Image (cartoon, rainbow, N blue to C red; front, side, top):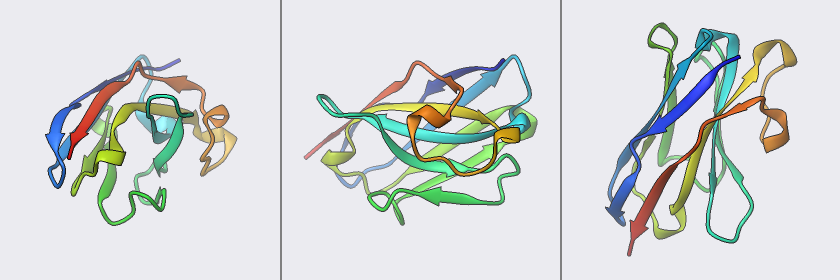
Length: 126
């Protein structure tokens, strides 16, 4: 199995940028399709972005399309989320998640992922 650790969260003003990282250990990251999710206080965890195991295909929630970019470096066992033009509604805990690539491709629900990190807090002030 794979262990995931997120980093890079913090406090930023609206319009600013952050880059989140997800470090994997235990198994090579190329075994997995990967996703980012977020959870705001009092709300359910929601899908943010997805990248296929090869890095060639990505998919985004409408709310972040054009502002966020998901990427991965399988050689380094890392995944990233570049977040630009941040808005207060982007505030939440951000989680990276892994889904065994043998199970198929894009999944936008939490139940579709096998492994999760502990999350990193992102706070966007207005």
